[in-house]
Length: 64
Image (spheres, rainbow, N blue to C red):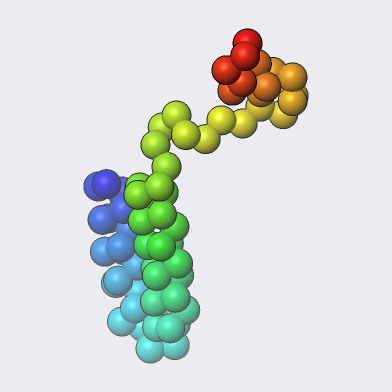
């Protein structure tokens, strides 16, 4: 969470530049939405990726 706060403060400092104001606001909003979605909807064990289907099936199927 500290890194997220630091990044928002860092990006907020760049919003003061007139030429790039809207770009940094847009990037900060997009980053905030991604972090919010990650924190709300995903836990550590929710996302399980295994490129081999048989291995993934063994890990996720209740029959194994």
